[in-house]
Length: 59
Image (cartoon, rainbow, N blue to C red; front, top):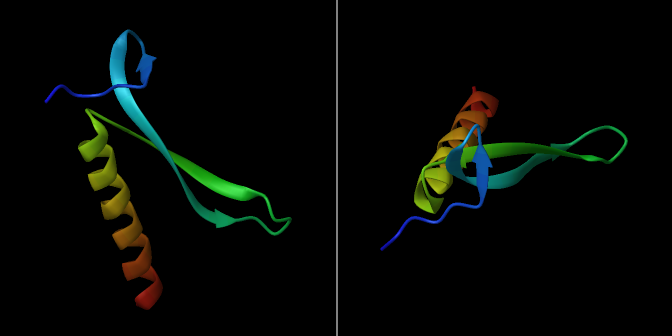
């Protein structure tokens, strides 16, 4: 199956996803963008990032 791309930076196609990771004191969301070589790569990066955040909070 062909890879999907939804943005381009410096002439290179990437797949971009945005994840809300929290909220500031005034209620505005804190968002982080993840870029990958396809949708599965983005999902993997998001999962790894969220696992790191959860592991730090448990310590």
